[in-house]
Amino acid sequence: MQDLTQEILELIRRTSTDLPADVEAKLRASYADEEPGSAAQGALDTILKNVDLARKNSTPICQDTGTPLFYVHYPEGMSTRKLKKQIQDAVVQSTKKSYLRPNSVNAVTGTNTGDNSGDEHYPTIHFEEVDENLPLTIELMLKGGGCENVGAQYKLPNVKMGAGRDLAGVRKVVLDAVHQAQGKGCAPGVLGVAIGGDRGASYLASKEALLTKIGAENPDPELEAMEKELTEESNQMGIGPMGFGGKTTVLDTKIKGLHRVPASYFVSVSYMCWAYRRRKMTVMDSEVSYD
Image 1 (cartoon, helix red, strand yellow):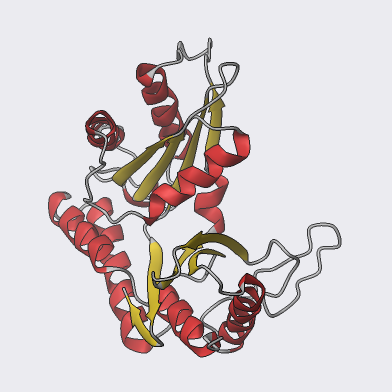
Image 2 (cartoon, helix red, strand yellow):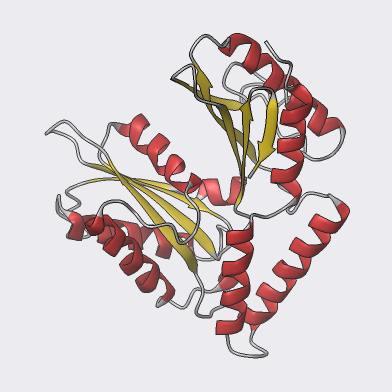
């Protein structure tokens, strides 16, 4: 099996230091939409200058390099044990090179490992097997603690909010999550929403939704319409960049619908900050490419 440690290290470097083109384009469009000289436009100006400097100097876009979330689609017959070790080694090397901040802290003892090594759940790696003739793909998302903290999960019906077990109820609780977040999630952000599933699957799917590029259409027309509606209504709240007020609170919304058992109706919201760091590497016939 090919040793991909250095290639994964490069994936981490790109993810940490180079904001994806679709995210940067949306931020620049949002800058143009804000009132000239406003605090909102000033915040976006600072963000965009930071994006340029991070890319030029190959330094992290944000001081909080976040939790590394890996999504691995591997061809049949490949060893996930070896892949996991290569990913873990690449994370440690990335920390030594300062592409990642040492964030891995033992929740019981409070001890920081110093190199982002951890237990079997850190870094987080999700594996899914694909046909043997398909390429290996490794997608990485770096999710900061601030935006992770303002994520939310709701159980419908919610009598207090008048939210029933339907899309109208989903709309109410998602907008509540945006309102509760205010500027604490480092707005403008992106909403990843999952409807259905159990508690764990719902949260997992809400983060998977964030792997979709800004502007990509949802294959479900009803959910596509809801994504646009939620983005528009979130931006009408006036929270704005970093909570300073303005027209841009949410850059985009991504929704996934899941099956559920009749007794449960969960809605999970994963919020992603403006530092929307995600990248993908593809390996086919020993050739590696990055997106």
